[in-house]
Image (spheres, rainbow, N blue to C red):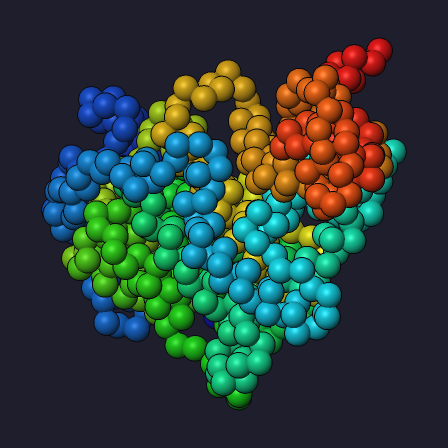
Length: 563
């Protein structure tokens, strides 16, 4: 019995070798054959694509596991399936016209219409819960957002807000902008919809921020044209509070959070489209069929002549064919349990390390690569229809794997960059966590547009994004600092206010040589005075005069003549 089994295994091995014996990936132990293959590679160039040689002798076909797809061991055509034209990637005309300053670049995403939605909902909640609520305006909201961005710039995401406002070890710009009590009040009252009418929208799990989210999400593709290569992947917004659609992903840096589907430009990591994941539909928790295909189809709507790179969660044979009909090619790893794969490409038994096998259908190419012993990597690609292996590399990786490694990190790079200077704060409300994500992505996309429209802006600096965010935060808080009536007690905050407001105008002498009647008191009092108001130039008597120190009046010591 053992001899019979061994003979069957040997026979199967010889059959596999006959099927996949290609000039570009030979799996034989004959040294003479290896030498002749090396000489053929030298004659054909450094990159051996396997298109030359006697292919008709090895033109074998084999079926997929479900017996529905016929694969061939040789290419069915010599040219690429889709010719990708040159794209004018980068900011759109609207983005170029609007990115005149760092602040205006950010306001392309955080639009005035979006600001009015947040202000209306927040003021409605404040008036409902507090009798002495002071209405917030655009200056107040932008200052609040600016402080969140500055907290992310200073890597203070896990730091208590009280320490940021501390007079000794805190940051002066926080105390100069608003008090800690006002910051807590705005954080507690921040809303994005009318909670009184939320019951009417109970079927929408994202009802608490739906209008703001949809308005912001529509701005992403309107301001940027992605390049020829894009990446589709998932990302998590960290959140551990109560939420009906909170997800748990143990392999992510943030295991608990809100899942988003993202399409990014593979080169700049610009977030071009985002789509929320609301969990399984229905009360029974039934699994959604074709979820991955639906996500990729929805995210790529409006794109043509692009290469979409995704991981094995999304990749399937049917998705590759459907995208190709829309002039979109796909490249991605694929799981071994897919029924459309041929069994001959799955096994690494008897194959050399760094060897590659190709299988071709009418529209799809399957790549099977052995990076180490008893390990295979499977990729599906629709762009290239020829076997190409880089023979100059020690590991002899095929071109498909090199392209995948180059383009797979668009969303992962976005996650890394957002986490470096994230403005998110600890919160128990998931709409606030989504709002923090809106601010993070808006600031990053604004930086991409600013960098590409102003390539000469600080080219020698390696921390340009940090400088961009710091300048953005200061531009957002400056109007409130200029409007603030009462200066804080901390000397550092007072000095910062004087610096931002600039030098005060020269003080007019408070006394005039000519004595006149006080223009504030009633005429019948006939109060004569030499004192003149420094601003309105009215004559005022002692009873109508209010004392202010130089700091509260915004007057520097140089203007008063004090040393």
